[in-house]
Structures are given as C-alpha cells and as structure tokens.
Length: 125
Image 1 (cartoon, one colour):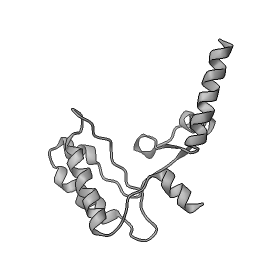
Image 2 (tube, helix red, strand yellow; image 1 turned 60 degrees about the vertical axis):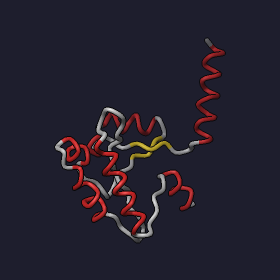
Image 3 (cartoon, rainbow, N blue to C red; image 1 turned 180 degrees about the vertical axis):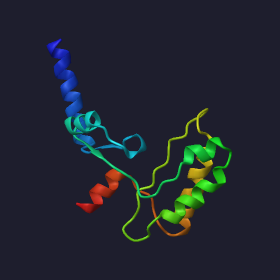
C-alpha cells in the first residue's frame, strides 16, 4: 500500500506541475463553507464569469437562438470576459452546441479570441 500511495503522490505532483492552477466554479456561483474549505485544501481557484445566461434553460425550452446574442451583448472587448457555458454532450444539452458555435462565430467576427483560463493566467505573468 505504501508503494501505491507513493505512485499516486508522484502522479498527483506530475499533474500539478503540468497544470499548476486548478479552476473551479461553484454551482450558481454560490460557495458553501464546506466548498470553501475543499477548494482551499485542493489549491483550486474559484472563478466567476461576467458573461452568462441560462443557456441550459433556453436550450431545454427549444429557444437556443437567444443564447449567443445574449452572451455576445455581455462580452467586453477591452480587458476580456469570462463566458460561462454549460457543457453540452451527445444526448444531453445537444442544442447548446449550436449556441456555442454561434457565440464563437460572433467572437471571431469581432476580431476577438477565446482562450482558456490557464492561457489567460500565463499571458498575465
């Protein structure tokens, strides 16, 4: 068991070296005391977005065409924005794929670019 623990520890250290920052967004952006403790213990950073609409609700209601325009109205050209989309997957929230595609096209039309939080962190250092 000690050997397995050592291997797991080495694997965790290697992962942390290649992905130094672990990002987290609490459901609805609301943190409980327990969440705060776990986020701190795990060395994560809680991130909120400034560009959000209930994309999942619009998609479920069959009104996915509203998502991209609402999100694009919130994007800041100077200084950037953090856009929050709920991850679609095959068989679940599939309509959100179209909203995400339209959002990315709108970003491109504005000559803006999407990057990950980790890329943003690297550019700021």
